[in-house]
Length: 482
Image 1 (cartoon, one colour):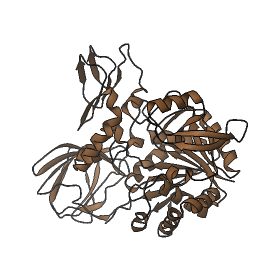
Image 2 (cartoon, rainbow, N blue to C red; image 1 turned 120 degrees about the horizontal axis):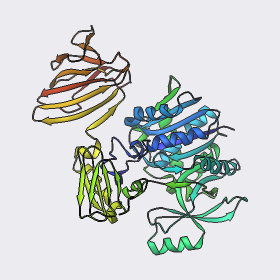
Image 3 (tube, rainbow, N blue to C red; image 1 turned 90 degrees about the vertical axis):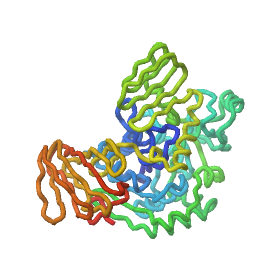
Image 4 (tube, rainbow, N blue to C red; image 1 turned 120 degrees about the vertical axis):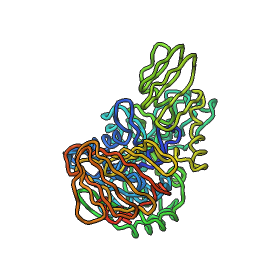
């Protein structure tokens, strides 16, 4: 009976704005140790498969290339296969898990055990995690839908709770008496004193046949819609990766509902195992700041900062010096295009700012000035009426799509490496460091890096419209052609 980890990577992480954005969400942000939450999750998934196996990721299609890069960093040289289910938009965890279960039932069999975990949680002690999931697997093989509970260390009002019921084994597994939504402080204190409640971590373990049977019983509409969608979403295998883009028109018919609401709160086959590891959902700037040691005044600093007469303040700076004077109990986050300043007791409300930016269609909700692409990245250095200046970095062996723009011309100046450029004709030519080329509007063009170091160039755009959607892709090695 095989085991397959399923990673759900769909959250926006709005409470960590301005570092977390819709186009660069919480799983991809770098922690103080230099790793990402998604990278750490892939490491945990790989640890569950010491002899190799399949790792499934359910994510937005916009995040596929960044997710694949994270996985390749972790499993390089290991015997793992990747399976990506790409959603056209977020539809919560019930739809994501249903699609993963159906896809794996077809490829691995319905007796396969799934371990479902979020991509944006921080879990310390990998060995304890594997031990806990080993216990969960034993119950899953007995026909239970198993969820993982965290032993609470404080009266927390930001988490859901699980009330434990009758015991099922000698190492803490029990039936679930009920799920409880985020409580008020008085209720949370009562839960902590009782010893009968665990935090709901959103980590699950079950056999596929158990899950599908219970979903058919309690939420048949979700299962029917997921089956229709998956049947319209053929899988493609290439280079050890299985890729399925979920059919858009079918996918949007699925309800936007969590697996807890759709199934776990209704099934009589739900069990819980207490965790033996440290867990955090990194749901606020306070939680992220706790990863950084505090100084004698209780301040926590990431980046370049000068603090004078400042106490109990978090400063996160990505590029500039941040100086403070006479401050207390604040959160200060400085990125290249946005600054957040908030009272420490309002960190749970930061998501309100992100939602307002989205409502107002402000670009700072969706993207940073530096944007990752499958071929590398670009950074907007400056822009104004009829011009935009970018720094473009192309990875060795990578290439932009063969494309054209209707409303802008581009001037490329190579500052590092050697570029292979198609401009107007089908014949490529080489452009060396300190050389340049001009691309008129309407000319088809392509930029490639044939070298072994990063290609860096400055792009100057000019024209009546400079939006990123003024692009017609004629050919693309990453499957993004129009």
